[in-house]
Image 1 (cartoon, rainbow, N blue to C red):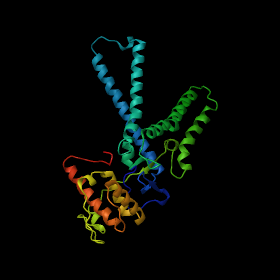
Image 2: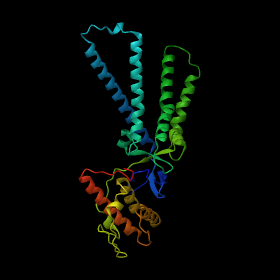
Image 3: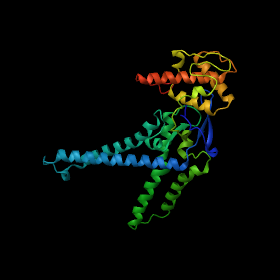
Image 4: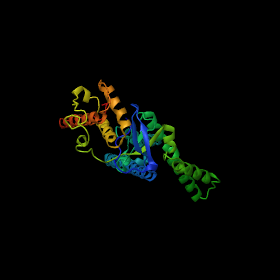
Length: 313
């Protein structure tokens, strides 16, 4: 499934959406506010810039310490050697800049450190898993949307400061920057151009912990006995091993917020996965029993250092 938990309770209806997963489940999600996305980007850029500056200073001081006392004069260093060092530095900056965003957004959390701090993440709009192609596309487009026009504007400002004519280039660069900067304000999902191309959106990611005893709130207890039909639901190790923490959180959301029709679809999906006959009429009891026993198994595994993040782990 593509999206982690959604905070129970109040949801801004203007930003409320429904995501249909590959299993056919309809999950409620909330689009991240534009201001929150901007804040996450500022945090990420600051992290990248400070890390690069610190790295360059550390390398410079190490190199200077190694050279000092050897009689090597940096002023006499060949032009080719200086160009080689410049290329190495440019490659490092390039790899770190893109690697920072790509590696984190391709991870199980689907979010950079900045996004995790403000509580949002990237998700695929089609309900599929977030692919490397989508993450690469949205991050490459970010430079075209924001950083290239900013660099262009800065370069033009430097030229103008030296008294060189720039003509209409300043207006062109300003229009370029303004077009992409305002793009999220002209669509209801707050998508930037990179999201449109990559087929992604940015959604809120909850910070709430799982309820301690969700399974006792309805028809089934943790033991798996239904107060509606009297049936006792007990699941084996193989059946519970199919799903992980991500699916557990999704199931909790469904039990809290979803109508009976959605629970029927979830019930049928789980039964199909574990090889049970779906039946009908006792879906909530089944799901609450499955939730309680899956949670108990995952918590027991964690005590022994075994963690199953999702069904693909």
